[in-house]
Image 1 (cartoon, rainbow, N blue to C red):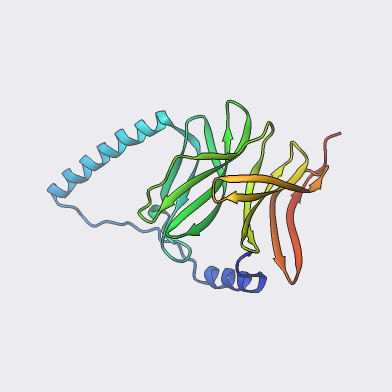
Image 2 (image 1 turned 30 degrees about the vertical axis):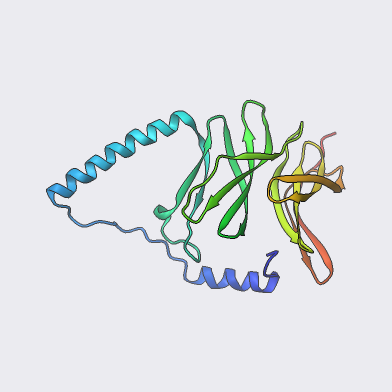
Length: 212
């Protein structure tokens, strides 16, 4: 929406939804004995690997990705980015630069019962880094809506705990950010998205009732 504008965004939704048809049939034919042994060996390896990951990673949420163009119609093709044990990921916003993907996420820390903004980097070979915290406060911050304006990146963050919608300016992409301003205070809002069109800024938000 930020990149293409309202009209092209709605046109793409209509285009992609018109032929969206998920594939749900079997993906195999009757295997030979040797193929059966190989597949059984792979299943054992997968079982051991899955149990190993369960001990190190959270089972709550993970990120899924697929590098092919257009909406994927085969969910089994997606790859996972698992969250570390004691945390989970949400609200991914992605910037692509020079064959690298910078994934800005909300990382919730269960032990501290609060969230922070972290960054995962990924290359075209699907190798990705561990989450690196870039913005952390004494209260929860989330939903890192990243946008570019006049050649500079900004982050619009929500914090229902702090009752504010805050803007951070990038000083050194992608790791260094500094607080710029609060565009709204005394507000309880989530899932904020800023959109610029025709010399006017639009804010899409879900708001709630403030606690007394």
